[in-house]
Amino acid sequence: MNRDWIATARTLSEALPYLQRYSGAIVVVKFGGNAMGDADAMAQFARDIVLMKQVGMNPVVVHGGGPMINEMLGKLGIESKFVRGKRVTDQATVEVVEMVLTGLVNKRIVQAIMDEGGRAVGLSGKDDDLLVAEADDPELGFVGRPVEMNVQVLRDLFNAGIIPVVAPVATGMSANETFNVNGDTAAGAIAGALKADRLLLLTDVPGVKDSSGEVVTQLSPAQVREMVADGTIAGGMIPKTETALDALNKGVRAVVILDGRLPNASLLELFTEHGAGSIIREPR
Image (cartoon, rainbow, N blue to C red; front, side, top):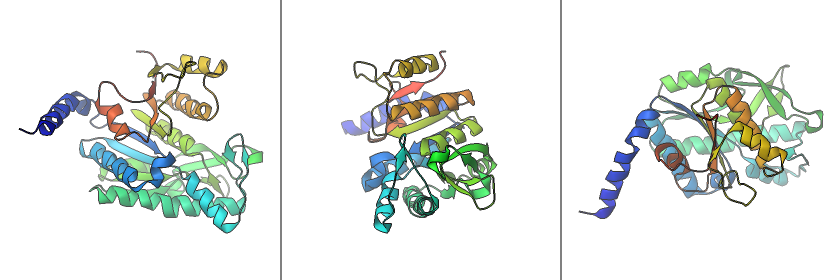
């Protein structure tokens, strides 16, 4: 008998406890980074999401799209400025952000999921007031911080067997306002409002690293705060860990920061004993 078949059967058998564990669980997956621009990586990600739904989970995909936004702004001759790692978003920029995220990136992910046999619907945070935001910082213009959530539309889609794919564009408190929301921040807010079982932050690094450069696989919120305070967690990892701590405070059971470039990263995290990346949760 083909050894690959035997290995596949053994893998499925070993995954059974995890499949049972996550049946009915809500898992919010932030998808971004280099994998978004690679057709094969996109297809593999979509296949993983479809599998989650097929085995009884309720995945929600929240995506970014920074490289695509930068490309479009460049084509239109609109210069980007950044403050503390966040894009300064004037009126012209927010219109491009909304166009690219909801019209290009969102539908590309929806199509990838459909191509793998799943059912998906693309939304922006403006649909049904899913994300209502206010200005995060006057220096950043139309960059928003979620202040109100309406996740019933996501629950309705779960019940209909549909995978929601959410672009992080929010409506404002005033009429005709549109805000660009950081993708990690939007994913954390959605996960918190849903009291999700897991928030998976797919990125371009293997996870949270200690002072010697090794990935720390298990972290408590207290350890994260200590590592930020002593400078071990720095740069772009700071907002990701801030998102994780905020999501935990809002009722998410655990947050995982993992390498989205790793094949089947989400499945490795959810359905194997070893997991993938760095899991942040309260000590058991």
